[in-house]
Length: 317
Image (cartoon, rainbow, N blue to C red; front, side, top):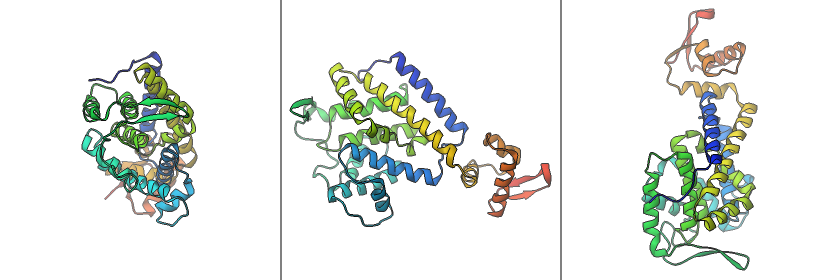
């Protein structure tokens, strides 16, 4: 059964705008981001997603844990980060269409945090804000069938991946299939759904913007609950995704280096190419910059030049 939501004019505009930006990502060689940016964004993703759940560790402390250094902090917070690091370092090991993989990811994410890690809840739960009940989740007996239906929806290739990822995220929050870890699982699985279609999302920290607009995040969840459909939440999350892509362009324009261009070009599978071929990929660099890049590539023995001047070809062995 398809989860309830409407396709509004705003959603159509957002999908169109995001699709254009993803086209720019491909055109401007941003699918495979520089290592420096990948590491920075992974740290932002982990810190932001856990901060939403009350984790107090800073980006500097998370960086230290990634580098296997000791830090001082609450043991629960440290365990959460260590688990998240392992999960986000192995994103490609999870199958976004598989309920079994979903449970495995929850087990990995919540290891040593709750006794029911990797298992659907076996009792009723609700969300309380202040003195009021904000949300009462469906009865625990319904969770397995609701999640089965949700994964059936994921497998429908006629649905737009951008929208599908938002719907899944919301429905996990609504169903609340676990005693704890539902929020981080919803955000994690949205990343998996998106990166299956668009590789750039593996290192795009949209969780950072969710963390920065946390009040809006919970507000649209509550509005969607009251409406009985995820439309408002979809609009919010698409806005977050679009802003995250804009930040990627801004950051990348500041830090892209010759080594990043060479690494990207080497992964394209070309065996023989010219400077013109190189510049056709990197359309915003000058001929002088291209020549410096290629000279560096020769010095690093990434390829060897054959011929002279404008007729020079480069061969990757």
